[in-house]
Length: 393
Image 1 (tube, rainbow, N blue to C red):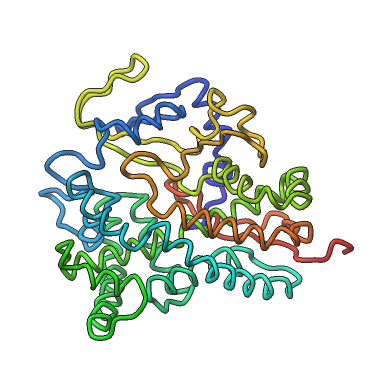
Image 2: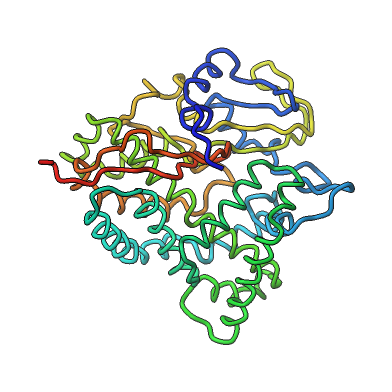
């Protein structure tokens, strides 16, 4: 699982070469890859690029049986096109909306303050384990109505994101037991909320199930989606952000001196190190991009972290610049499949960074003790060891 090779720890030199030499290319498996900002942006917004090819979903075919993971992700808006995408997206919007986001601020602040107080008592710590991971986990537990511990959720989420990244039918089938465990957990919670509703997202799903024609499997699948989407990218961005700031002392000092730059710093961190590394689409018809003909029914991958460092879109793209203007990165996507939870993610990241700013100069990276998960879909920073010490130390 852990892979600290440059392909995962620092892919940016390779992305730079791609942007210069082969901004669009087809690999040995026949998959097309886009690296330029404008081309990846087009993938998000052009209806000729769909989530899956006509007539089938994902990797399900006559030779391979449908796995438990197939059944679940087939009910996510993320993996659907209209009209099914529209129904699922509207359903989720009942819960994840601007008014709701505003009401969560106090929850996030309380969690961040509690975790930071504990972190500051240590001489050294794994920032991911002590702060970055538990912060969004506690928040999503509160919002969704779950009571999952960090270890259980980490096991579940890593199983799913790694299977999705590798993508083969055998990889999907290998986590059937995990998927059965997760589904049973939510089946029991949903049943409990049907008997005794509470002020949480699961109760909201129960309340709107008839309006949006949701059966038990629909509700379970979307609980799993909310659980994963509600913590993975935030915890990665927190770790990636601290790692970037500790390696950029000039920008770190600028932020400490100007804490009002927190929101701008969050956007730059998302551009500089997007937690989502790539997206995939299928061509529904022949598409011509920069004089390159891509036939119908082709798998196309957009490399977000290459696009977010495209020198044709961003000045000095390999430099972290928390004062960057017009920073329209692609970390949260665009179009109908843009990140529904972007408002919540931004709020969590901004609040967490604001709480960390007064102490940023206490932290120091601990040598080569950073670990990365070998996952090409996410910039999966798994372990970030830091010295936690006063400035005078």
